[in-house]
Image 1: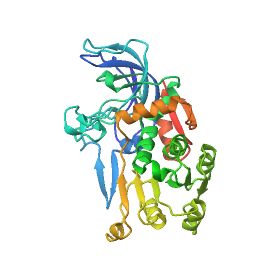
Image 2: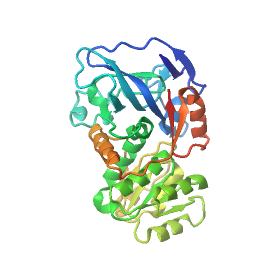
Image 3: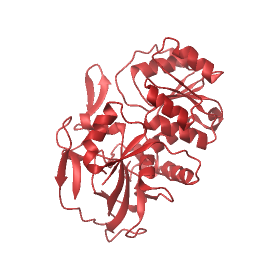
Image 4: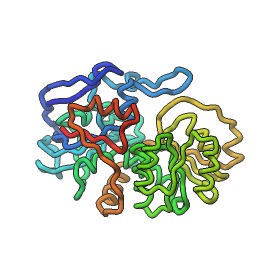
Length: 350
C-alpha cells in the first residue's frame, strides 16, 4: 500500500510503502478513488492551530501519532471487509463520512458524533485518504454517491458538509434574504452553490483575491467585495440592499471577525467556520446590546451528509472547480493551497 504521510510536522510528506491492512470485525478496506485536499490539512501538516498570544493547539496533544496519513475527503471502492460487516459488496463506490466518534456517548447517540469528545476522525487521528487504500471501521460511514464521479463527490465529506451545516444553522427564513460569505476558497464557493440549490436568495462574497472573487461570480454570487478597501462596509451594505442579518465566515481571522462585527445588523446571525487562527478583543456588551447570535460550526453530522448527497444527485448544485492531481503530487497540492494558488478544490487520484 502506498501512502504519503507526515513524518515531521512542517516537513514535506514522505512516501511510505506498507502492506494493506486486513479488515477485522465490521471493518472495510477500500481502494481510494479520490481524496480532497482541504485547508484543515494545512493546520494538521503544521502540527496544530494558532490560538493567539503565541499559544497553539497541538495535534500531538490531541492524540495524533506520527507518521500520519492525512485526507478526510475520500471516495473509495470496496475491496474487502471483515466477517461482521454487512450491507456492502466488492466494487461498491462510496463516499466516506470521516467524523467518527466513540459511538457510545450521548453525543454520538444523538447522531452528532462529529462533536464527540473522544473523536477518532479519519485523516486526523486515523490514517486517511492520501493513500491508495483506506480502512473504515463500520459500513455506516459509507455513503452511496449516486451518479457523481469520485472527484466530484469527495469534497462533500468536508467542504460541502461544512458549508451545508453552516447554512442550516442560519435557517430557511433568513436564507430568503441576501447573506454575506467571507472567503471564496473551496468552502466559500461550495457555500455559494449550495445556497442557490437550497432556495436561498444569494450571497455577497468578500475575498482579498481577485481570481477567487471572479470564481465566486461564476459560482452565482450576487456581488463580490474586496474587504481590504476602505469602503468595504459601505460596498457590502449597498450590495445587500437592506439589513445584513446573516454572515458565514470561512476565514476565522481577526480581520474577518472585524468585518463581520462592523457590518452585521442588530439581531444578526454570525456563523464562524474558518480556523485561520489568532485572537481578538471584544467589548462584551456588544453581544446583548446588538442581540447578536454567534455560532461556531464544525463540519456536520452523518445525516446531514446523507441529505447533502441526495441534494447533489438532484442536479441542483452547480459543481465547484475541481483540479485532479496524481497522489504523488500530494505535497505540492498542499503548497499550492497554502500559497493561494488553488481555485476550488484539488483532488488527489491514486
